[in-house]
Image (cartoon, rainbow, N blue to C red; front, side):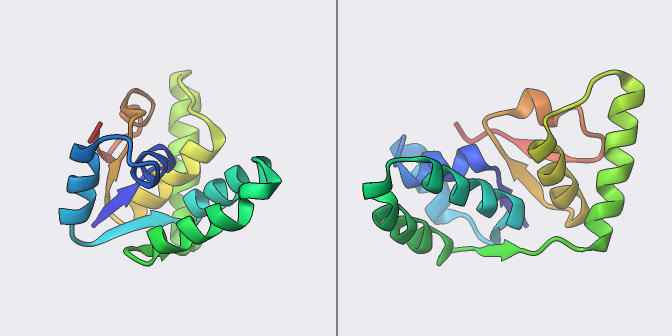
Length: 131
């Protein structure tokens, strides 16, 4: 399973590079976290009001090609373990990134991100950068 981080979703939707779009189109078993979906919705709501309808349509087309994975109790357990570990290490990561990392680790998914320096701090999380 491949889980896309929020920044990768944005790059794909904006067609940042043909290479990234090709990897997205060829990938199998793609998903995003419900947390990522929430971040994308926030980005739309926080942007220009006259573009919201168009951007929600674009988001719908994007998510038609993947699964939006729901958060469950096991994700919460991974969240607690990871947050506690990173706190003890004195090396925390951002709140939403922590939620996404916990979700990906719980699903044993490879997380695709352009923020690998942050996510690489999470033990037992597979991380790749497609950018």
